[in-house]
Image 1: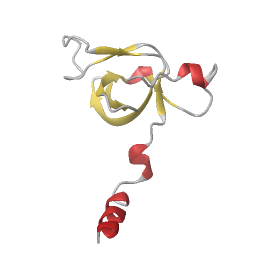
Image 2: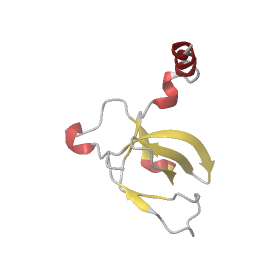
Image 3: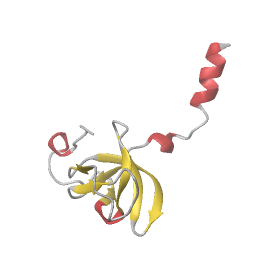
Image 4: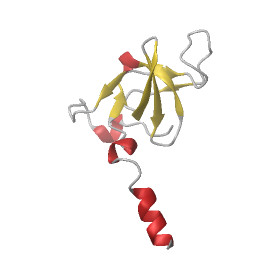
Amino acid sequence: MLCFLLAGCAGMGGSSDLAYNFYVKNDTPLFEQGPNQTTPKEMTLRRGTRVRVIEGAGSGYVLVETVRGKRGFVSGSDVQFDEGKLEGPKDKMWQNQY
């Protein structure tokens, strides 16, 4: 019974739900409380940080999640889809500490 339940849960979301196929192009502030410029930033995501885009938040911001589960809003212009064309060695670029 337990195997059946686990298999059912695994099939509920598509593989794209968990894909961290975007990266941060520039060091950019991460706003956990909302995409409002008057809200002080909680932290800065470093250039190359892998993220997944959860949803657009309007005003040019997107809600993202890092590989380590940190969520917040960043400027959509600082996020780019990874087409495998990122310049420089990826092992030094990807900053997954968040």
